[in-house]
Amino acid sequence: MVYGKVPPQAKELEEAVLGAVMLEKSAFDTVSEILRPECFYVDAHQRIFRAMQGLTTKSSPIDLLTVVEELKLKEELEMVGGAYFVTRLTNTVVSTANIEAHARIILQKFLQRELIRISGETIGDAYEESTDVFDLLDEAESKLFEITNNYLRKNFDSFDNVLIKTIQRIE
Image 1 (cartoon, rainbow, N blue to C red):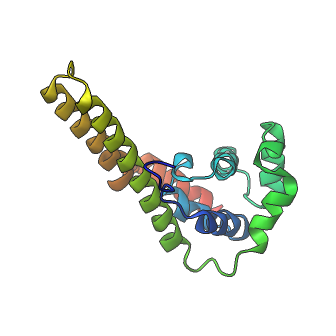
Image 2 (tube, one colour):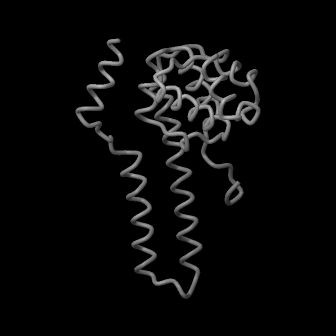
């Protein structure tokens, strides 16, 4: 809790997105364009998403069993709550139809948390008499630009990456 408030989060949507990815083959492609592991509020959800990324890197399918196995290989299965927790994620999925909207909400909550973090750091530094105000402004601007650049602007794939992904989908 910061300033007596709970940080912005959407745990239920995080669970729904992770569960939907394990149920729908194409869902990870949609979600991975929007989210990164650090966008998830819950540490277990971050670890599960990283496991899914690892499976994609290996060109392995993403489903309940492969995610559990990947977490076992990384020795993180117990850290996320065990196989039961991963299974429970798929049981709560009603539909995969709105997965992109859900992922965007998760991203928004992450961005709010990042803005709170950066603002808090800036406030703390502003109280320091030894801090150069112009350096502080540059630093704050740089951190905000970094968020915008990393999470809000589409990182367009090179032609080669697009071609490789297309070939993999065709296969």
